[in-house]
Image (tube, rainbow, N blue to C red; front, top):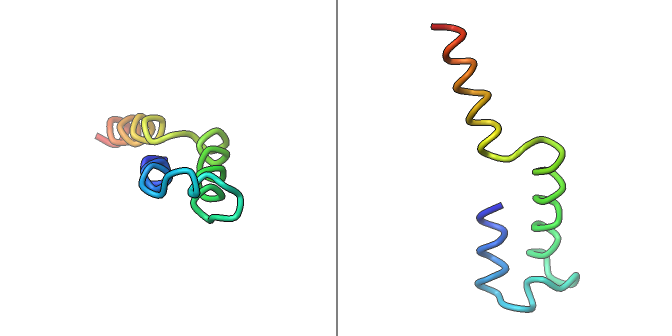
Length: 54
């Protein structure tokens, strides 16, 4: 998410248009974030796994 948002910021308005791939990647990252969870969710899962094995 962070990389795609920064690429949109770096490229300006053209990055958000449908003709440019950065907008496509941002939309895909948003969907995957909602479907699979964000980075904070995965860090919590990893920490819980680490506690269970110790």
